[in-house]
Image 1 (cartoon, rainbow, N blue to C red):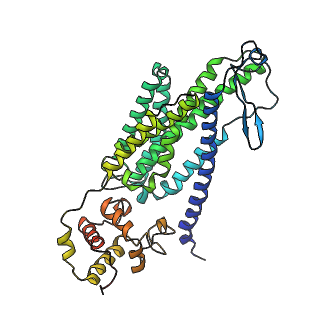
Image 2: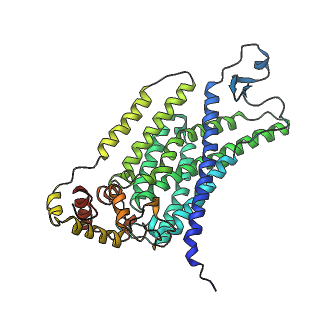
Image 3: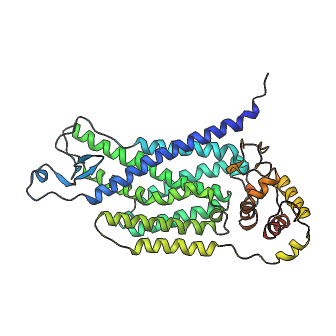
Length: 414
C-alpha cells in the first residue's frame, strides 16, 4: 500500500488554482454584463414622438459600433407585442460566480479553518464553530437585505443605501470579533455576493419568467416585475466595486489586520460606491466630479491613517547583538520556529502544499531576499504567522525588527 495522504494538500492547491481561475472568469462575465446593461439603461434615448419605434412600444434605443459591426439595442416599455422565438437570459454568469466562489471558500477556508479562520486572540472557536459562523453570515446577510428591500425605505435610494452600508459595516464588526481578520473580510464579501446572486435567482429571473409566461398566455405582462428587477439590478451594480476589493483583500494585511478593520472596510466600500455612482451618472450625461473626488480623498485619508508609526526604542534591541552574525542567527532561529512550517520548500503545516506567495524562509538567502516582507508582515502589521498559529512573541517580533532596521544582514560584516 502506498501512503497517499501527503498528496491531499497538493490536490487542494490545484482545486484552489482552478476554482480561483474559474471564479475570476465568471466574475468578469457577470460584472461585465452588469456594467453593460446599467450603462445601456442609462444611455438609451427615447424614440421620436409618433415614430414607428414609439408605436411598437420601444421606450429607448441607441446605436453603437464595436468589433467592426453596428448594433441597435432597443428597450421596450414593458414587452414587445409578440414574444421572440429566441430569448437570451443572463443568469448563469451570476450562478457560476457564486458557486465557484463558495467552492473556493470551502477549499481555502472551511477545509483549513484552523489556519485561515480561527484566531485564538480574537475568539475561542472550534473549527466547526468558525465554519458555522461563516455560512450563517451568508444567510443572515440575504435575509436582512431582502427584508429591507420590502420596506418603503427602498423607494428612497440614498437612505436605503446608507442603511445597507451600515448593516455591512456592523456585520464586519461582528465577524471581526469572531473570525480572523482576513476571514471576516472574505465573509463580508461573500455576504454581498450572496445578496447579488439571490437578487438574480429569487427576484430578477422569477420576475422575468412571470412576464414571459404572461405573454405566452396572451396576457399583458405586469410592469411591476420589470421595475423590481431593475431595482435589484441597480443594487447589484453598486455592490460590485466593494465586492471586488474584498476579493483581493487577503493580499493586504494592513486593512484586515488593523485594530479597527471594520471601519477600514467601511471606508473602502463607501469609496467604491461613490466612484461607481460617478460612472452611473456619467452614463446619463451628468458629470459630477465631487463623487470620485470624495472617494479618492477617502482612500488617501485612509492611506495616511494606516501608515505605520515609527518604532521607538529600537537601539537597545539592536545593541543586544552588535555582531551581525549572532543577530542573524537569532533571527533565523525565530524563522525556523515560527515561520518555516508554512514558508519552506516543503511545508509541514497541514493544508499547505507550497509556501504561501512563494516566500521560502528555510535558507539564509530566502530570509535575506524577503527581509522587507518579513518586517512588514511580522513587525509592522503582525499579520504573520497566520492567526499566530506558532505563537510568535512580541519580544521575537522586536528582535526581527531590530535586525531589519540594523541593515538586515545575513552574515558577518566585512
